[in-house]
Image 1 (cartoon, rainbow, N blue to C red):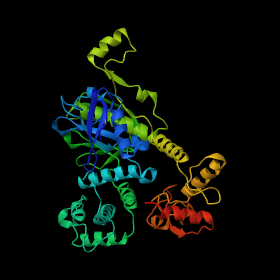
Image 2 (image 1 turned 45 degrees about the horizontal axis):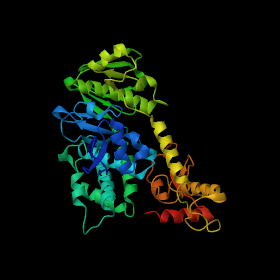
Image 3 (image 1 turned 90 degrees about the vertical axis):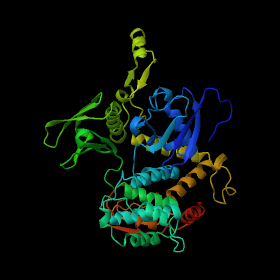
Image 4 (image 1 turned 180 degrees about the vertical axis):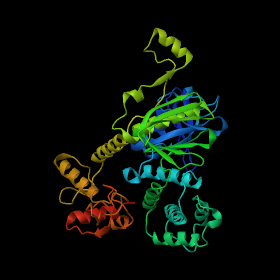
Length: 450
């Protein structure tokens, strides 16, 4: 991906996706990280939900850091070396369940990252049955229906070790289990298989966690609900965000003060290998708490910044100077705001698109305008409401019990354990039937999907 025009004052960044495909984007040499992320997200078709993603770069000793999107790229140590192109990895920074993702291309990037985390054992399946299901869905997503003449053995082999179980205890029929499940998925589209893989991944321990390894073998995982502490010879301890009283990083040291289940204040002191690691932990706790737990990002978070020596001297004479100012956090929206903003943006786009109309109203696929516009918008919204919210492909024909929500096709509904809308446990998925033109139009529209 290259831009035409003058190369003067241009900087070309190489962005690697989770499947190792590299995209090149051009930005101004003084650009901040947000501009680079927006360019690559626009190219990949995930611009409406770009807040879920971030850019990572590698510093000394292989340590990975998140690029601060509010600061200039050239000022971030290690993000760019002299006379070389900046290289970043596009990764999911804030994980959410797949039913909250509105764009299929966004869900695909989540799938690529989830598969990479499974293969590299950052996410681990708890038993062999889960391994078999994950292998089958990956095979269906990447190779389609099972073909006995050309089985995807490379996929099976690549994913065979995504578990914490001892390899010596691997059941002899594991491959047969995976193939049997793969056979049962016949007819499932790649996008639907990706959805169900993400649905399973969201139930794994460590989903959405950012891992930090401290001294003395203690590991902290910062996730959507709080901090998980994994210490040697001790059970896992979970510290919810609501229990945290104070957190601060001082050079290589990090200190956390929280209220335990005994209603007594405790402290957690850790030392890390580098200053970057300690400051990254502080940043992860603050940003994930804001993203998952808050209604909006407070100014106390967005306004925090540090200055270099030159900027500090200048600020003595001019407090409003931006010289040498580097923001600590780059989070812009919370989980709720990202979902709502993306939904509104996608809906606004659909209003200006060509909307199929009934033959009695206007010619097929004529652009919506004039006196029929409002009716066409209602018709389009009704057709969207009749499409399965999981696979976004088939028409709705199932009812969840006991919550009685009708939001999915029977194929997807039979694989749900909880309602994607209200998260209630499902006792039964019943087939339902709609009469009239709306049901036929919804089915016809779903059949016409590529």
